[in-house]
Image 1 (spheres, rainbow, N blue to C red):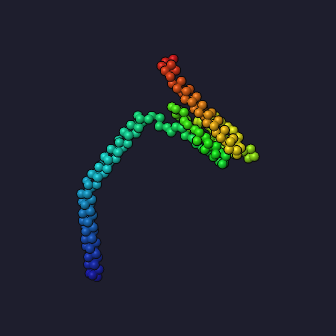
Image 2 (tube, rainbow, N blue to C red):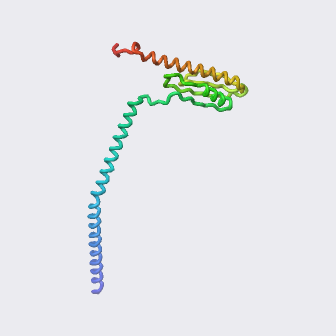
Image 3 (cartoon, rainbow, N blue to C red):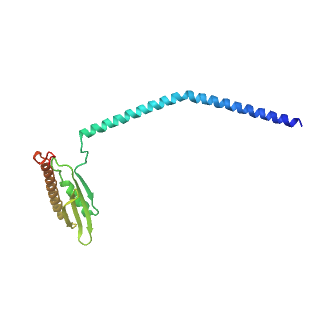
Length: 180
């Protein structure tokens, strides 16, 4: 009978010893981590400082870019929305003959095509969503050339008129003081 209590006592002593050893190892681990913590926080502080400098540099660069060109627009795009060979040929002829009017800005030219079975194809030229040319085209090259030349002339005249109107609106005699 005495053997059982001594075995229990020995198991309790062994478990207590293991628990103390585990606590000691945990303490050593905590000390090791706490000693390396300043190194990690220093690294984080340095990374944060670098990040803040990078953000400042990007802000300064974007402000400098805004000062250089406040409009930041792409002007004078000629966009093709053609579907058939007739439309592609018209677009290529238009593009070959096109030259942007001097000092023109704030516009895009869009060439759209709507196939019309039996009649050819309907080609529409728009400047900033305003239709300036519209014609049903047949697959005859001479007709495509003449239509492209006419479309270029009408488009250039429309862009020039819009530019002139915009300049007139912003002339000094058209600007008010804001006082009614």
